Image (cartoon, rainbow, N blue to C red; front, side, top):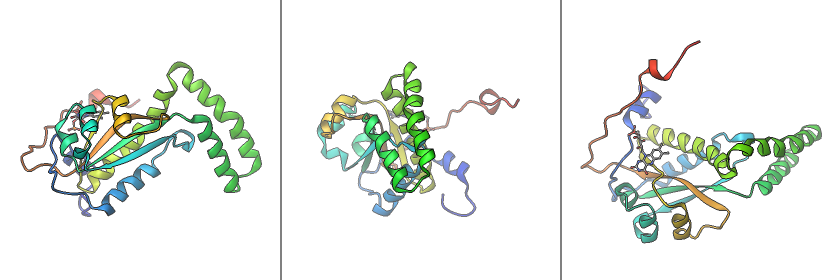
Length: 210
Ligand SMILES: Cc1cc2nc3c(=O)[nH]c(=O)nc-3n(C[C@H](O)[C@H](O)[C@H](O)COP(=O)(O)O)c2cc1C
């Protein structure tokens, strides 16, 4: 979808949640790097980026991982899985963020203000939703950006939520502060696949102009 005469809507119409990938068709490292860069550039609340992505190549070789993801065809056949985990070390992330601002010569007055506001804002935000759920919201923004980036590159993908986070963490030997929240399977659709028909709400149902 990189042609000049194609636009983002064409790319979004082209993509679909791929159920089976062509396991033999590998993702070029340069294209994977573009998707990872898109993830890195995605916005998060405050720009805190309290998450981590594990890049799994040839997931089919990790039997425990496949089992943890219910042996889904797309997980077995994808040449690459991106496992998005929330990083629960919020305090450390805030400290790093403040340090980054100091290193980048952000005015002292602003840093002082952020030091005061950030913990308070996050405390209030996590008063009614669990901390990990609030962190997961940030992860899903990156997931969305990665989905669009993949479509733009004519790479197939499928977001995966049907898995046991505990078992996936164990299969990948993740540290306890990385909690898997969503997986993105990447690759190219199998020749046997028929792209799924899109079902979407109509514009009238979805939008109100006031
Ligand atoms: C957060 C999320 C989790 C999903 N989990 C799975 C999954 O575990 N397995 C799967 O085959 N598809 C999964 N899907 C794909 C959706 O079913 C699919 O995106 C939706 O039906 C819309 O179809 P389309 O993406 O083909 O347009 C998931 C999608 C999202 C956004």
